[in-house]
Length: 250
Image 1 (cartoon, rainbow, N blue to C red):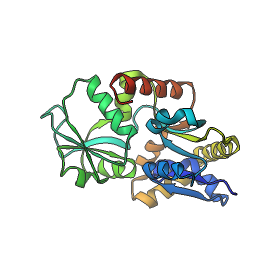
Image 2: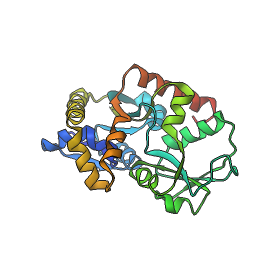
Image 3: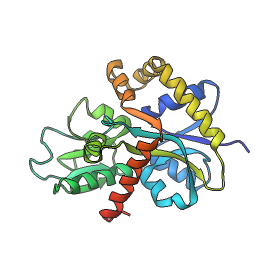
Image 4: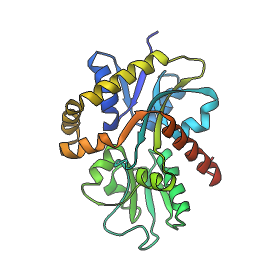
């Protein structure tokens, strides 16, 4: 049986997997929420999953070096509005139900700053639809990149986390079932990460075609991310888990 590899269906996963896919390796693309569902059904053997899911289930999971984390700003996990700042009216923040990690990160940030905005989950992903349900909207992934071009960004959650803790925010971490050793797959993905970093112009060109975004912004975007779970990223993940427990999210 061949190993099934998954990836987030966002442009942030274009760089780490581009080299691997150019070699003909098939990678299954899906939303973070869908990847978790596929993993639960044993339809995927190795993939990044939302950090919150990993923390909740780490007793049965094995983690690897490949991750998706922001160094400081993340640019693609943002709260936007039609003009109002978050503290203008304590208004509602509509959040896509496609996220759990970012949803709980938002709750942590609001609690840390003693902000009273009410968070409401909505079965939408586009900012224009989310903003029908609140004065602000939390958008993630490619929809967040598009939204920041059309709306006022009032909070970048990667930036807020870094200001609060001094550490990176790990949004996704690669894993397999504990009984499965996917170290060779992780090694192949990390080699693809290195290729992507050395050939970032190629990746940016592909991303620009996919999103129709300026290449200058995409260069900045990929520079804001890290795909290696190093000591700082591990500490950032530990702090996220601690805050989730502190505020009753776990």
